[in-house]
View 1: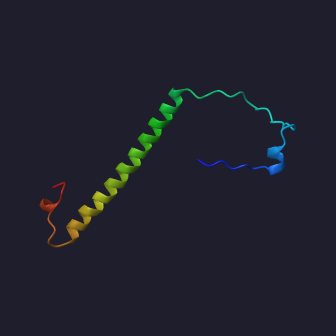
View 2: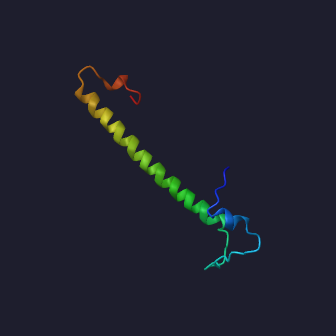
View 3: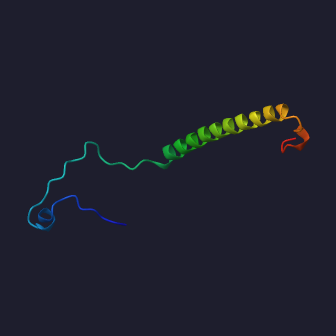
Length: 80
């Protein structure tokens, strides 16, 4: 990876001057795995539902087109 220094060269090379860092407003606490797993499961379930709706919509259009097109019979389609 690459590192980018967001200070002037004088600030980087000065060894004696210490920069003050603002204290954290809230103490750092790593998140537990359970909430992340729950969030991932919810995201996955929502994605699956969106994909299911998308596939259903496409399949409905295919069925409608097969009814409109004269030589297209349902026995030739994948779902039969």
